[in-house]
Image (spheres, rainbow, N blue to C red):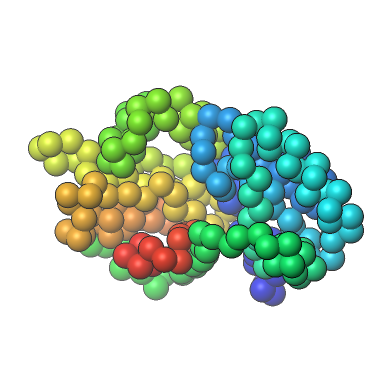
Length: 229
């Protein structure tokens, strides 16, 4: 599979796995908006064709109005599918680049999936969401939005939580889409980081995905997040 073909496939499975509440297409620019969750992955314009760069100013203005109606800042998520002309336009106009991410892929056969804790997926979305919010020490008001996002996932998915005597320690969400397994919402409680919990819960999630038939795993992560990388 060529480089851009793989990017297109990963973008498609990513959109299915972490679904926005609404998607509005302007040509091949997909504006994803989610009023209940602030994630930039769920609230951004995603150009998906390197050759689609017509009427840039007018389309940016339309996107700005749409995002303003949602009360969201206008953010463009620029993957290798974004036209180079759009990148140049943003640079010329002084737009700010931030939050660079990398998408990493691994063959499951190359990963040691046998060690770590045995863990089966949760069936209770509410319990998983409560654990995820607690681990990150986020505002409990985030629960409704994250619940909506998790419940909107259509491909098979596994929700994983590790706990100790004090409560939830680590969380991970794994979405199985044909031969691919995407990892989302991986987190470890700050006071328990560096003890191997992330590695263990990711292994548990990928063991589950492998049993479902997945052959490769993928993860989008902030490039600056060295521990996650």
